[in-house]
Image 1: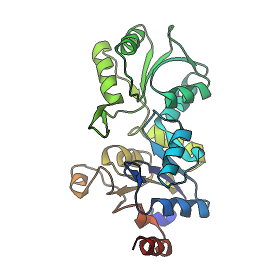
Image 2: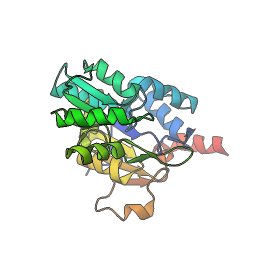
Image 3: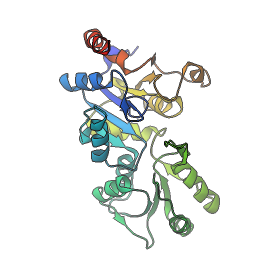
Length: 269
């Protein structure tokens, strides 16, 4: 039976695992340093498609966490990777921000408002009725409907915000077409991440804070799954699901070797 000792590569969620509202979670910096020092391949995953990996790397650095942009895998990158495999050089109408459009451009796609092959809906803080109307009309005319992630709401300092899943639902209601969702909990996002770092599912672990995205997708992708209790899920919520992670830990600090963990705790005293 596979154990943590068998794991050679790691995928980890970002919010709720490494950071919480831009504050680093205790143990996160030390774990990232340990992975770098031991040349352990890893990727930080996020369903957020607003920002480019460079943006997210800078955000993490401001929080005291060093993650190079090449070690960040977003739902925008996974979506672009998927679309490139489906239709190289295709065209897309995009509702989204720089993270999405940059990923598609780098994948060889052309952004257009004339008979696009795909309508791609990602995260944005600037949804417009005009853009949503165009998306609906393109889909009714035959464009394929893609969404970066299924999250209906997202957090903000003032409360929840409508997110990709909510806008996709509006378009679905108007067209009768469901989107193909590339990001978590679709295990395809994990498989594309594994390909990115040349990892194998049998020797890769996934660290997340959500049972309904990180853990279920990790299980379906054949990964060793670790749920940390520093984000969304707690012990009571675990009982609601018919599946279980391989490990439940208080935080990523519990993944540190004993010596590193002792140092981290001593520094925190």
